[in-house]
Image (cartoon, rainbow, N blue to C red; front, side):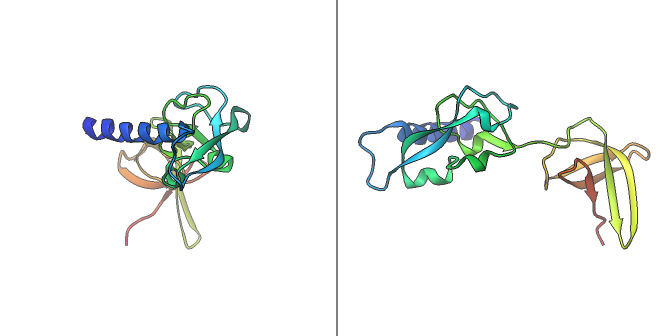
Length: 160
């Protein structure tokens, strides 16, 4: 596992270096403004519009899938790893904001045909909207799975 991370990190570093190298680029590279942090951002720091600027880079075609190409891609995101100032932002280095936090009680809601049941549950993992997380019902102690909603609740679905 560690070897995979090292290889992936090395590959990302080579790609970042190719973005930064202005001379000797392949013919498929184009000059483009890319969003970059104004200051170094650390894991968990939000990517606010005021903390992002744009810088001109020669961008190879392969980089368009691995780096943020527009500021709009960064809206509502936080840093997953350290993002150095003035460097292109790798998509692997950012994530959505976690609206459900492990160990902080949230409401779980089951709704079907006008019937709505809610209960307070303890998430066993953090999650962002759309992600499925496990939680423990604080009254019964039973485990259940729910989909994280943007409002910070869990939507429970019962298999049929």
